[in-house]
Image 1 (tube, helix red, strand yellow):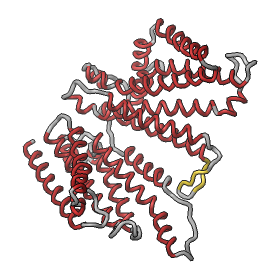
Image 2 (cartoon, helix red, strand yellow):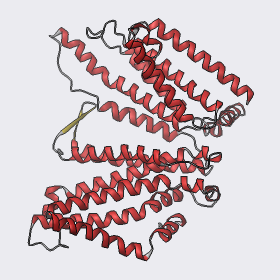
Image 3 (spheres, one colour):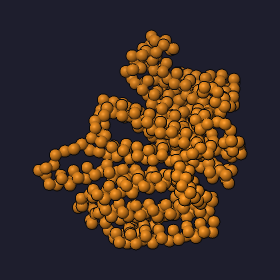
Image 4 (cartoon, one colour):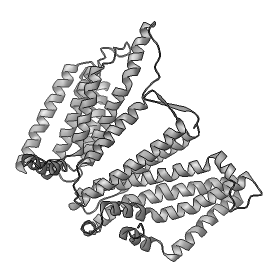
Length: 461
């Protein structure tokens, strides 16, 4: 069934020429053999492992990030969208097809790595023979599993990110893929390296929502689950591109999962502080940390959503028309992802308001309530700001938005601090209790101004 995939067969036909298939193992073998002659068997095994990482994380991720963007730049993507391929077939064909030759090179390197690892354990073991006890003891199969899952996760993220820019390809035929390759490489390689490190301490326990879980099981489960979410997101993105009904229920479930998963990492073991008055406030902080951490995660997902969403006036018109005509499913198919994430920001923020943190001597006039409210208002301001740029200009929206955020959150507050005007900082950054009235008035004025500008632009459109 997999080989019947037209996209996969096309990539096999293009990438797997006879001379590439023959020369690749020869070149890899010569490189590793030269390192073996110049150094040691152990160092040659290390080189083979890092060569596999090169094929998986650099070559494969780069190809994945270019798989769809190159089609758009060459004006062939619209023809593929009109084909009879399903979102599943397109996802499988693009992900595996674009990275298959990289996996071919990685497979050769990993095979040599396993053979050399077995050779190191027993000098009498033949090169092709594998010492299973040694491999189990040193965790080589575990490392390979994490490396393969981490590589697939990285490549999936690269392809998924590149798909989010496809609506803008209708008017921009020179899209660059390097940014998506770089972001996916940073996320995927960091996640994989952390998984490899934490797997070394598999007998330790992880306290997740006050539940003790074996660290190795937790790491492996996390890697597989996030890979599954990446594949689901890839399928949903291709379904959207192929004009399938696309209600953002998967994004909602992913947001809820992230809130539960990451807030669980911020839990602390319970302790008895009945007879210690100062420890009671510390216990209250520890108890509330997961809730506030969930609020932060919701904010991160909201900013991610507004960056990857297609915030066009036409999409909002279709959303409103669908609701007015009672076509709920069709209308929800045009619902932007940021609305879902922002709703969770409000929900987690409200829960935080019901569990205020105690005042701290380290921060004068500290108020967690003021921090949550002003942070939510600044998030609304940023949403309006991106919509204004999106409706005002069709190009370079993201770079302009990031530049303005850098100025509003970094440059201006830094200048105010240098000229001893720290009392004016709440006008540009969330207030934690100082000059809260200024923060509320400033953000409110900015939001009202941006909404007025947006209405003016939409009226012209």
